[in-house]
Image (tube, rainbow, N blue to C red):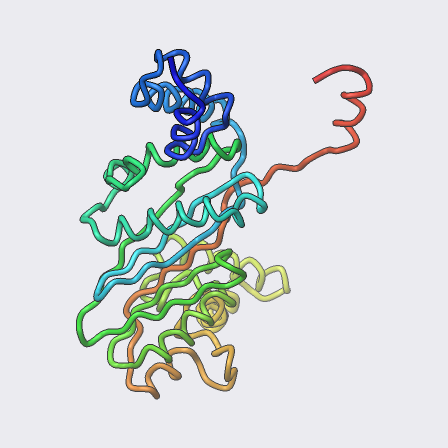
Length: 292
């Protein structure tokens, strides 16, 4: 019904194991295309079983083409898989596919076509092959004008990626700003971007701190305006002391080089995801006691 070369061909086309390929060909009476469908369906089943697992490792990456760039994050369960070439190829393919498209939402991105099928199909098959949960978590497309420059920086092999856009400066200055963002984690570019509710919450904390220090309420109120500037220096990029020269702010560094910061996007792999805490002692005891 089918030969060893058919199994070999199916393995090369799908990356699935030999036994799975043999089973797929048996189920499809030797039809390669139907066998591929069978393996994909099996991959969907395998992927579904892994949905409850925690994927907080992985990679972030930046792809730039002309005046358009994309920053993205793909997660895996283990750092070992994040270093796998097939995982890296998937991340790179996703980035290059999106930057060549008009996709704006995750649904649109997942339905984009690659040589391995849609991004979603590619993801499902990769999960089946690698054997752990993989999640395409997020992406953002950033564009610039001809008088603007991109600044990109990747830290720790893609654990942190920063993409900036500067107007009127050069790419070296923009990269310096991206390096600073990677290190200092600003939440906003400038104080005018801080949401009113965040600002009011911080002012309330500052006032309570002053009252707890024994200051009268009216004096505490006056102290807020002075101390809020420290808050801005902590969270606003242009007001932070520049990491390469703490005597000047990032805003002054960019201005001194004839530029202005337009955009800032910072991705840190796994941020906001509650990471798994393995209790190896309990795991061993469960195995000793014959429990799962």
